[in-house]
Length: 271
Figure (cartoon, rainbow, N blue to C red):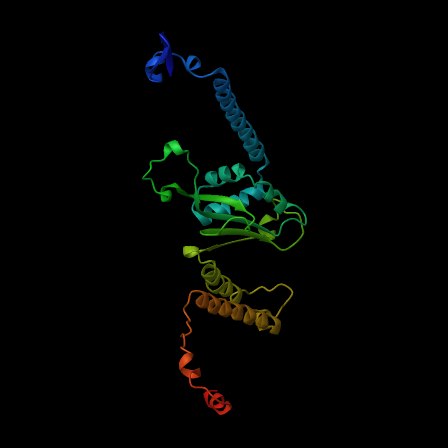
């Protein structure tokens, strides 16, 4: 605001004009204080520097990619219906990229998890209309996770290893197992039950080679193992149905039973 002061006798009159008309045709530096303009320039330079560092980090990671990473990328691309190029770009941009290296290392991580699900995207307030729903901000994202820091609401792709051997490009297909299961409508128990009952158990029961166990499915220990897995899935199904209120206990008005109890014989009869 431009203020012009006119002294008229003992009174001071103030006249204001709009900033827009005052600065028409002026440069930004003539409108903003020097300190504000400097902070804007620094902020812009900081963003450029961060983007530059992020690009350098991505290229370093891209240079590290070998046959082991290609194996993971191809499995993820096939399972989630993304291109291998898309998966590679996502992986090298992920801030948990180091978990992959820890998974490959000798005596390293036993599991490597990826979630593919709707994630709330951050947008600046200026890009949002007041009537815009938050649903419009959800976008499918693939990301590496520890499995304990984010809610699981979509698809989980996992890699498992059972030995402590270092994972190399030549043994990755033998050392690493890949699998996926969904969490329909946020119901993780239903997804796990389907994965075990429809995928894992049929696969185990059709398994011909059980390593050192020459008898295979005829071996008593193998049969006990498969029975235990079947029992676990059955228990899991019952638990899921209970949680979903499929089994409901009827509320009983206990007053009608205890209202007229007066002596021990009445209690015995009621019992």
